[in-house]
Image 1 (tube, rainbow, N blue to C red):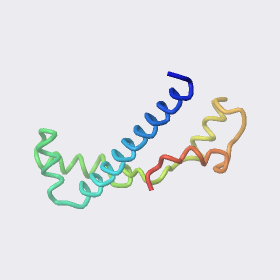
Image 2: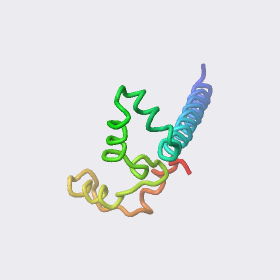
Image 3: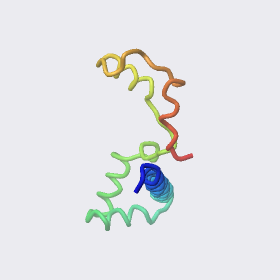
Length: 108
């Protein structure tokens, strides 16, 4: 195998992995929508977790939220960047423009 062949093989593998990740993210998003919109979701969660329906309802209401399970938005960017500078993990403060390529895989 030549270096060119190896590079093509790695690119194909990376493209396949990216497609699998995107497929997973789409399925996850669909599951979250169902979990917060279907009355059957609590019963399914209770059965899956071995909890009573009341316990499942309590867990769902007190410890989870649709907003917390979202994958469409990245929040807290400014806070994370400021902490990274304070911890000297970044040599200088970055702006959104500096890091916008990081979001290329975020599911739209």
